[in-house]
Image (tube, rainbow, N blue to C red; front, top):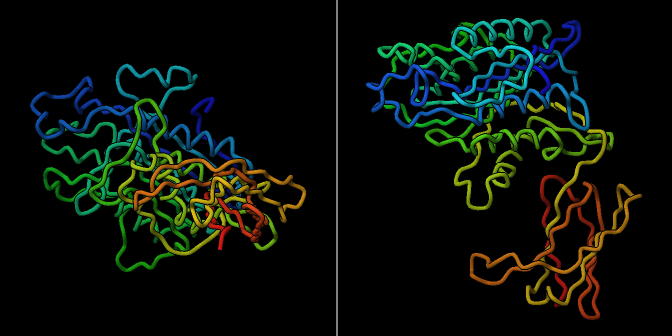
Length: 388
């Protein structure tokens, strides 16, 4: 993202309004310049983070610059608050001053964001947080000045669940929440950690469509130092088309429900086959289109033949039916993919295609089998019986 000035457009028409928070620098936690040594036993596992500021800026950059398509209601505003740990020079390449995600600054930005979100009932509200988190009665998200007051460290934190439930009462109609933070159990009972908004028990909800993405309770977030986090990369891939489905007009769109169904698969791909033991907690209600693509997205097709020992004698090709102007794809030779759960050798074809409908042809010895098959993101599978 070239600069961190807030991105604002007119509020006359429905629009997406985003509040993006990435907390990597925690001055009052281990490794920070104001950490008190006496607090070490309590917070020793909560150190400085390099992934959250990069992840937040990646989300903001994608929102502003966009992908190969457009939002259903356009982009209205993007507010970004980020902090980096000591020695991290990420923000030096930007010309404007960074807004530190202290609890006070988060609350002020949140107030402005909710006011913009409420200006039109058809707005889309997006709240993204990446940083330290803990799990108590709710999920507590920690501002950059967390532990500033050692006797009341959670004064610089907020309850995400209380915040989300309160926003359902105030609008807009579509709300998206992405929390890229750990949910480790609290080491102490913090008492009442307030939300950024307060629920009214006598008020009904006005939110019609909601999607919340986060790690399961008592799980840890995944990230590599100085890189965008795995969950955030999976989220951006969803928006870029890897959670897209065909719409009624023959185009492609990303919907809240398609993100909910696809995010765990994409996160597993980001982490590798052995990197994810639990799926993303993707909850919500309703289903609404968010993003329209300019064309069909790429998708992977995996083909296996039956019986497996015939793979070395089989040739596979994909003949496009729709879109019809694509060339036939020769899938080449099957590749060894290691043993299956029974210890048997697995050979299969993995080919990157443009999403659509194909006739998959498998020729083995003197026999040719052909089947129609829809190839949709992120990954389609097909088994072909080539020997009876």
